[in-house]
Image (cartoon, rainbow, N blue to C red; front, side, top):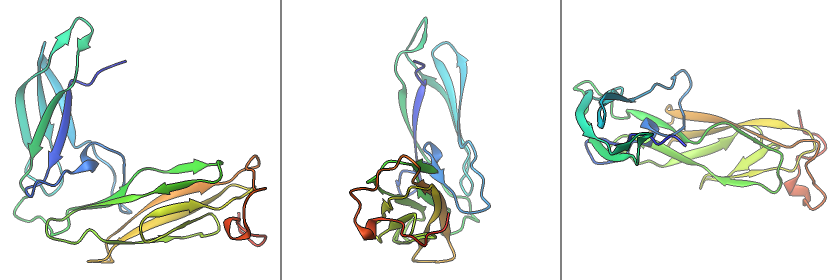
Length: 197
């Protein structure tokens, strides 16, 4: 198994970890994911790490020492990089849902979704909605619950920032399939006879 040379933790000026710099994140509509952290080998055992994130000044750290053997890095070198915003940075610099598109035919199925907001001083509270509750419902704590379905269906799960409802992010979730066993499902746990597919 390949071992990454560096494990980078990116933080904003308030010390908040910015998980979307390294982990999957469902971004707001129209915003494409970009590789914000790049790692380049200078020579054996030495690496350069660059963080280039929208609304922040770029940071480059050279000469990061990584322990290696003939197969490559032995273990990732931990590195924390703290960013400073640009002078024209908006209050909310990033918002998204932690996770990615998923489809499951397993029932019962529940998943707790989380959101992320990069906005020091702004409440991270969100409002959750599901475009098709006959596929999956979601409560205001972010707990998603799939409905039991014999036919696959998709819903769009949306999180809106309560501090500014115009800021939102969405992720698709699919549930159901011909092999899904709904024999133990209660009526309120099923899609229902009038559901759309």
